[in-house]
Image 1 (cartoon, rainbow, N blue to C red):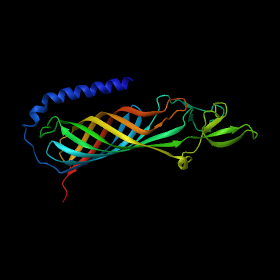
Image 2: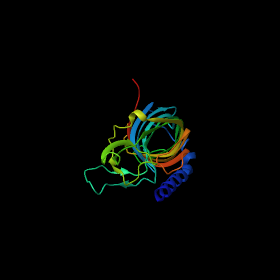
Image 3: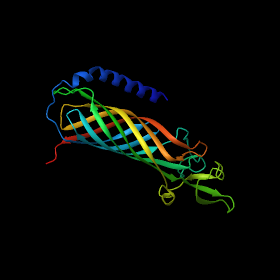
Image 4: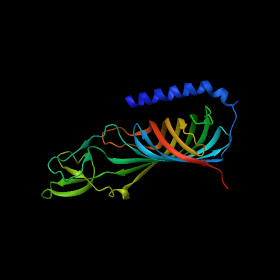
Length: 249
């Protein structure tokens, strides 16, 4: 929870700082206006990590419509990795984990500049709000277990909390196992964030972004066998992005 506290304080500080200078922004001069912007980056979340690709369409020098694509790997805070001490050749596993969970989001919204970057460089602070479709993807976990009914032969089975305890688990199964049993969890997401762009070259973008993502699903999901199912979740994130601005020819 310490990382959540630090990121939340960072977001609050930047927002207050930016709001103080927002009124002056409308009166400042706009330089050369680009029509398009694209960027990609990696995000570190309080519940995992992921990748992001974003396309921007400028309405004015200070506002742009934004289309955001992201793919995230979601973890449960209760996950603990175990190792088979009897055989070091076996793969580690997370006891109690029923499925690997991913999130695929397609969001749309508006981004607005809160402060204007000087012509010689400095930073440009933007606020964005995005909403859209979220598809949760759950892939079941398969484990190698000791089949005590068949002279201790190893068997590859889907994890079952009522059947597989630590005494029979040998190790993690192959990643490719379970794709035929994938389950989908459609829903919606809302993202709000502050984006700080830095760098002296207008055609190139480099930025750090901090924000919050809210997810809602039409059907409940869970990652760990001994956790409650849930329809909603929230995560705080920091992302590092790079890209470019351009005009269509």
